[in-house]
Length: 138
Ligand code: NI
Image (cartoon, rainbow, N blue to C red; front, side, top):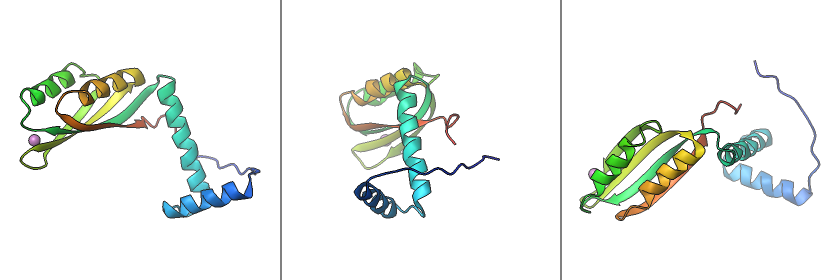
C-alpha cells in the first residue's frame, strides 16, 4: 500500500486559479490528481534528460507510393530490435499509411531511432510520444 502524505504549498492566488481552470478543462476531478500528474510529467522529462530506460510511441504518417520507403522503414526497425516492441500499420487511404512503433530502451537510443525514421523522405509527419517505463513513477 502506498502511503499518502499531506503537505501545504504556498502559491500566488492567480497561479492557483489558472491551474484550477486548466485542471477542470482537462477533466480532473480534483486539484491533487492534477498536481500529481504535473509532477509525474516533470519526472518523465527528467528520465529522458538523464538517459534512463524509457518507453514511447513513434507515429509516422507517410506516402504509401514513395519508392523504397516502406522497405527502408522496416530495415531501420529490424536494426533496432532491442528498442522496437511492436509495430502497427494502418492503410489510411490510397496514398497514406499511418504507423505506430512502440519503443523501449535508453533515452538516446530511442530518440535516435525516432529521428532516423521521422527524417526519411516521404514521411509527411512523425512524432515521438515520450513516456516512461513507469518503474520510477507512482
Ligand atoms: Ni499502408
